[in-house]
Image (spheres, rainbow, N blue to C red):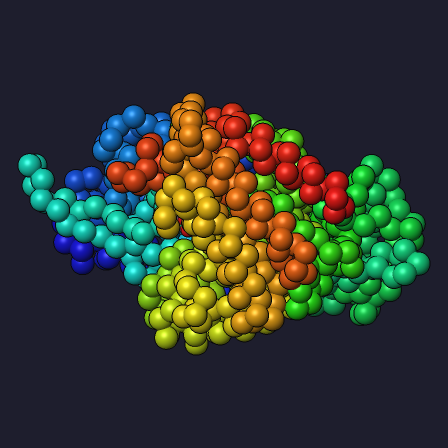
Length: 630
Ligand code: GCB
């Protein structure tokens, strides 16, 4: 199979990728006017073999997948290339096909509902048919996409959804990859290669929902929050509706505020327009959203109950969780509710045995329990947006999120890539803009930012993000050397990744303290901006003990951390250093390489979420820091 052929596969899938849409992408929530039906469960599944385009050539979307040949049953959500033991599936490069039948109740038609089909994430590119009609194209994994499919449904009968998923990564995808042709004893073969250090999991990774709305419906809501000195919480809101009003029909929007016990709050609304689509809500004696351990009641969330009434249609009701807090940053500090915050956190991955990146509530619950057990208050969604269900936990537990787009290891700075990169940020910001937990937008991880094209490329990315959100700072995780980096100048807050005594001079933990102190100070001196460490760490093989400490042992990981802690303690006295995020929360799978033993082992927890010695060590530090600072 030639590379051209593979490219054709992807182009075929992504040809209809449209510009950034202005429509909303609110998370589906049940209400008096909305039903939500999950399509999670077992789906039919087939690899597109032997010819990657066979599914298109034979038009598999026109019939039941099971009628096209032998199918497997694949769980959704999950990564198909982690679930099965067949190596052919794990290593498959190119298209796979899914389909599922579902029932669309006749009552939906009778009530005049619109029906939306929504995917939380399909990695990497997806094309979706409903009853043979092409309804959706989406490129870039980790982000939701949806469409009103009412016109394509058969009510009172079974319907079929078919999804083609393409996991190929190229120079113009986000993240990037390339294909390589190799010869094997069974003939030529194309393999996917990439530079990033996590497994290229693929499939339908998050929940698939059908949800209904009235004909005129709440399409999007924008909120920003503030508060006055006399404890009045202020919520600026703006509502966008979808659907069109008939001639002579009027519309009215009303809001109720509920506290976290679902009891109506004392509030007033001052609307900007006759319809009540935008305005300001004032809540007396408001409780602020605080990060974990900065307050005895972290993650306090109100609910905005939004009711959209029209003359002739059914009212639409949507309940949006909202936390009231402010974010500010100066040349030296990051402040939440006007109080300087120090980030005690992690880099993480959506990764676990068997399900891959498949969203799993049990795992998410365990992870947040561990995050709180260890005394952390933050993490970076390295290296892509995490599931909305995961972000909900962050809101509710008061965990601060550095929200990252899927740009990893960027080494070409073409206009085509820039467009996709900014599209990923637009979709991310649209999805997460209302979340109090999101404190920064991370626009990249470790781009080759010494290339001269990186300057104008990242200038454009930063300007683009500011057109969408001026209230949160922009950051990135920089690995380029300080002297040659061209990205830092475009950020509000500098994040830097360094692996002293690991990739650089392994075994020599004595280099760490002075190097980190020196480098962090230089980043600040160069840009006059707050600085935090977005990655440092060492692999350790759980259960490997060596005395004196030796690379890969639990002891070495602990020792390396201790040396960083010394540097961080000095830096904290210098007044520009705003946080530390160890790499990584838990061990995770990577592509096969001889530098990884069953994956990356820099976790302080194993993949099964059991603590290594480093977890206890970090716990001691994070709790001590919390007690000093909060
Ligand atoms: C990095 C990358 C991260 C890797 C890590 C490592 O700099 O940002 O994706 O996993 O190093 O462990 O090598």
